[in-house]
Every structure is written in C-alpha cells, then in structure tokens.
Length: 124
View (cartoon, rainbow, N blue to C red):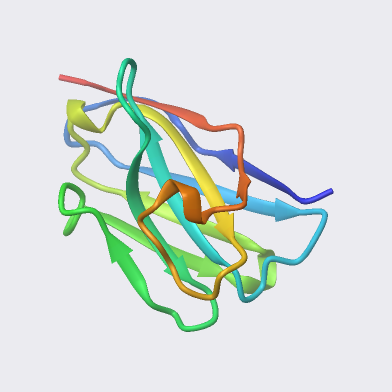
C-alpha cells in the first residue's frame, strides 16, 4: 500500500531553520507531483510548496517565498522542505501529499495520497 511518511518537525525559536522530509514507500511516486501543506489549529489546510518530479516545476505560497525551499531526491523517493527564518505564523501540522498528475498544484483536492503530518511549532 502506498504510504507517505513525514519527519523533521519540532519546536524551534523564531529565526531558526528546520528541514522536513517526506519519504514514499509501497509504490514508486516517480513522475508524481508532491506538495507540502500545513494546517494551524482552527484553520483550513493551506498550500506551502509543490514540486513536479517529472517537469521539475516548483511553486511556493507567497508567505514562504524566499524562506522555504522544496527539493526532491528521486533515488531515495524523498521530498524535502527546507524552512529558514521561521516565524510563529509558520506553526502548524505539515503534511506532504502526492498527486497522480505530473503537474504540481496548490489545491488540496488535486492530491491522492497524504502523510500523517509532522508538527512544527515556532516560538517567538
């Protein structure tokens, strides 16, 4: 069964960095688009970044441009989210998701597989 597993979350201070990992198992996700989303308490899940592993197209939410970087290691079936200069507003549960489409999307509904999430807490 296809599975995505996130790791790398934690409690950090404002200005710190974290790197999240999303490892795929159970099937190959080569050619799939992979996205990162986050959800803060009481808020809807929101798009953070996405990468098309076949076209190498990359997209970021405006709120993280210049601070976050998404990358893919196809040999390891792993997608990373490097988060720098973290802010308290970045706090939430971070989810990775895979889409059967070759093209990355900002839409939650475009993704077919989801991980269980990893908590990121940024203190001021």
